[in-house]
Image (tube, rainbow, N blue to C red):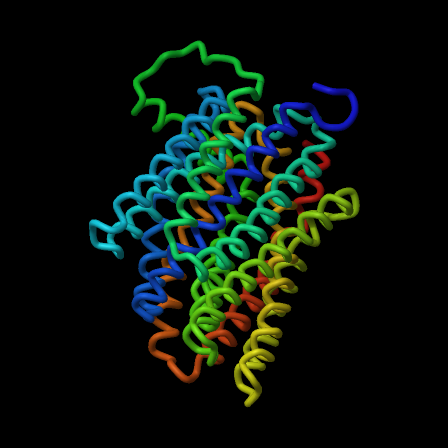
Length: 419
């Protein structure tokens, strides 16, 4: 490990994330949008995206356990090759089967792979960088994710609107394959476990250790996870389902233009995430864990202008412009909060439990996402012509939740300094 700056291996992890996450972002934009264009149903859109999250929830703890017992580099390489095979297979089979079923299954596989993949990346950070650089390194990883999410939907939207879905699939397959090849050359310190137990016993024991630490030894982690569950349920799910539906089905825009603008809206979300990641990195020493709840309150408040503009008799482009600004604000504040929380977990968790606990955090905090996606899919379907009330509901509930739970973050600073 280098005395100054970041190691070559950490930089290569970052580059691999840029390539891989670009492909992920383009796919997560193009595949659901394709279904929405074909059916026009927000309920189907919400149901499919909800189902896609379920494998991620199931695979996160397994990914965390494997990350603590297997070379993290090998996990990244294998999963990127597998993702390339899945996406390439969809490009070949799309013309010969049920499109809705094929896309739903592909999204489920992609989210499952991502659930197993991310614990390895997050668990590699404290191994590759010094403790005082963990928050900066986490910020870089989140910034990379936001940057990829910025370019992925924008370029994916342009390609999709001009040439259709298949070219997007081919581009993403190439990204995953290139990322896997590059990751072969990364070296992540790894010590092979001495014990060789049955896999089911390992899963049971390791999962129990992660739960015990997060809910018994450090209850603050458990509290934070429950708060994130609420935010995912009421705010994140509204953005995931609402933005594509509002842009392509509610605003009076031509289909091709709407698809492109939907990509730019996803880009605004990513740009906000990028700005939040950069701010978290620059102000890492000034950000206090005790004030993390303020970021969630600000993110929830950013939804109100979007609800208000939907009530007003203004042009579709004006509504879209306000939505873009709101998307940026929501993601900027949410990303700063995410960086703070992930840094806290990485710092206070013992090295031998890092992968397990991070996987547990990702799994539990994601549990509410499928429910939220399905809920908002139905709400937007039921409230046709009154979509502003759905957005307003999301903002009010999220802001109230953030305000009520602010005290949960006040004792985190002390625990961090004692770690």
